[in-house]
Length: 543
Image (tube, rainbow, N blue to C red; front, side):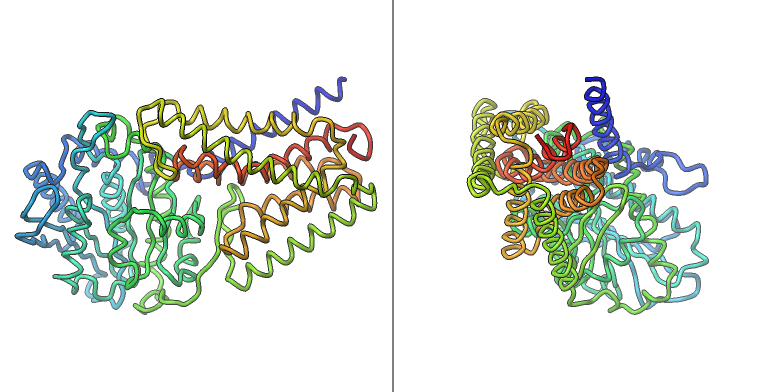
């Protein structure tokens, strides 16, 4: 019994360490840099000014004050600043109105470069929003104060190494983004010249107020873009998010130009209850989130501005798209299409090896097909239960059910955690009478089937392939060494991936997608519990 409690303590400790590494390594960045580098505290000073009052298309005077502040800040840094004004523009909120973009250029001393990096953010805040019957206005501290503040701080820090510049820097602060991307559309239609020689564009957004800053979208042909993005400290990116975003009714300024200019779209996405509401204010900003923008974008900016290789304005134009994902601590992994096919083949062979090796130790074929079918039914049942629960929560909160955008549900995060715990307990209960060794091959088989099916349909299957890889590797090593320590490592990496990925999954799609998430997590629950049975069993085989 003493050994049992010892293993229990180790398992709980492992879970705590995993959670710490998941969120600690993702976006840790000190708010203050004593060397004068990127400072979240400096950004916060900008946000305090920008978010003093709502400055939407319904607030022209307040918007004008924000615009003038941005102009003065850019001029202070020595930029050549222009205000691009567009009159008699139809707007769904303000009617026939005028919009003004702020455009700035910084170049190496005495040289007109052949290539530029352009940073983009919008300076209007959200217009009136209905939140459970109340009309509220955002103050734009995060959306898009984060973008404005981060870009101004990047401009400031870029001057610290201006003598090393080989390429130029452009800044575009757009107006009326919230109403129909009007400022960006007008610039693209009326002043296309400002985009001349822009080799790389980075749009800085916010869809919430906290959490890691996620690279959620790239332009097509992103292999060289991701080479540059790999310079980032604490990268956070999944190719799946770009695929999902394309299917959602959401747009940013980047949407206007992404088919013509290579670039990246980066944003925090946590807490939609604060997004576009009166809670998007200075008191609710996150210095850690701001720091994470900087830890990613500052190294990318510095590399671009100081490296001759980017002087070719067509350098980032490519036909190759990458599959990529982030594993906290380990960083970002990138695969070409061919490389991803090879990776899938290697993992499938490893799974087959684990299947055969474990079958030789113990012929776990009894009820194999029945148990495999039950695992699939468990996943489908989880999806149905999760969707029903989300629907009932919407009703209880007086909201219309939206599978991909269910906002303003009270205690939604608590319900999500409880749902995952309930799923784990349900798995343990439903398969309680099964010997552990009987479940090993069904788990391997169903993980392989899901990974293969998702590869055929979407090519994006890392959320099944990674658990399959870790579980298969632990099984093979166990079969050859008899050491159960491999399952601690298996659990660590499976949970490290699952916590970080499913956190961003449910945050992006909201609790309305709870059923989809539980379907996917059921294929992580099974190998994790199987690993625990290996750890706690008293014999070579799992009883």
